[in-house]
Image (cartoon, rainbow, N blue to C red; front, top):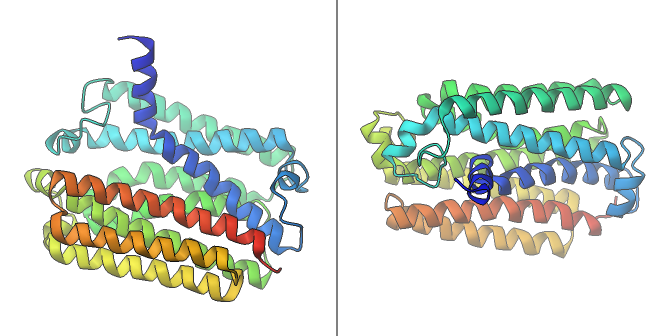
Length: 312
């Protein structure tokens, strides 16, 4: 196997786009807290003069976030290889034979350990609130623990959604926020992310319906049927939209945020249309997965770009 293919296989294993998303998900809430405390919304100034970490500390912190995300994605693939093969998910490196399970388990363990060590060292050197280290450990527990609860169906969906919330929690705890407005922002933003991620996980289960049925898994798509599971995903998407709307009404109060909000709602509506018309079909499932991934980026775009126009 050539080096280029080997690198590509690792990128696929780690889900590199989600690793980048995890970094952004750490930076964005930290920057939001920085702005809501009355600082000028200057991202460069935030990176180099935020009062907590210098730019070197931020680089290592983001590296740890990427490793946490990569480890979580990798260990999930190692546990899911039979289901991925049944669902013909040959976009997954282990399912297509690029890596052995043992190699991925070892690699994931190393990444988890290194990321925790980096955050621990940063917490000591920069005298950061211990909640940052605690939230990092929560991230690890969620990443590993999911593989033991995912067979429980909806509980597994809830668990993996907490994994999407974890990097945001790390970002918020970096500045140890206690002000009422910032606490409200934290609750609404974590809620929007959690509901959006849960809806996405249910949509993914609908796509995997046929393979999960062969493996006798208990996803909502299996227990309720694809159509009813689609309605449940719709409920979670509506709850996510409500949380975003509350952020727009009480915190952001600007047209930039509402533009992204409108875009988010359109993509969610398109996703649900595909879910109800062709959710269990291979092409329809791929589209739905892609659109829900877009919503995560759109949501972060709203949170980040909207804060430049917030009046703290």
